[in-house]
Length: 266
Image 1 (cartoon, helix red, strand yellow):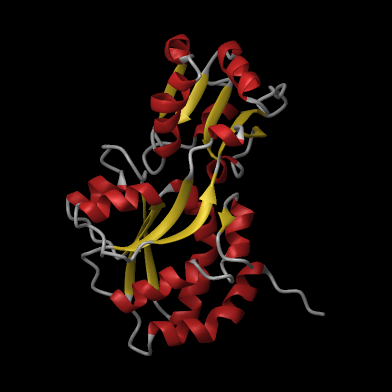
Image 2 (cartoon, rainbow, N blue to C red):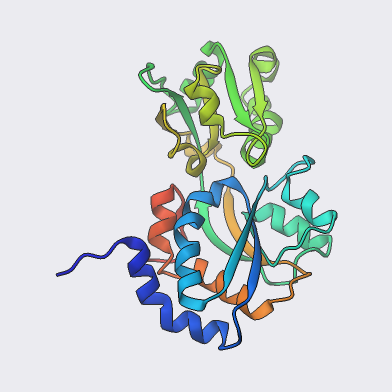
């Protein structure tokens, strides 16, 4: 049997359905804003959608949360064009409350976990239990975490919950993410932090690190990556088709490969 690459298989399976969903109107340009945790999956899925529909996707990246100029909420508030948003689900809910997302357009795509990395070749600490994670945090010489959803959870909720917030203050730092910044794993790979935490899908694809694993399940923050249609879209049909495609079983293999847990069965 002939073997197809994932991208070709996705395009072949989704072609007819996408063309029906997107309609037969002339090609549209869609402005898509995504946060870094979905970037790997999007890089594989976007070309399949473009080939199937003839539409052109214009990508803008930024954190799901925060007040940086690059953050998706900030971009929307200053009027940057957007048709589809792909970001942490809780952040989508907040944008809907502010009228920046079409009501009821949010679709959950995948679950995400927070994981930890060390520099390639370094000893891998034990983080399998709450007690061992706490010990690892206290023993680490330096800690890095993101300036978006996972980092905010760690610094504001998890570290205080573990009773280590004060002890970690002088040796932990927040890392500004793409597009202006970089993944936490890149900081760890250069040896500028001994351990680093971020969404697993943002850690796995960075060279020079070793992935230790997810933090214990009982400490995970329930996090979903979701897609939604921006209230200012001028291409609602094409935007809806893209959201449906990302939530489909055809898209699931790319999500899984990126480190996410798709909600649609492949």
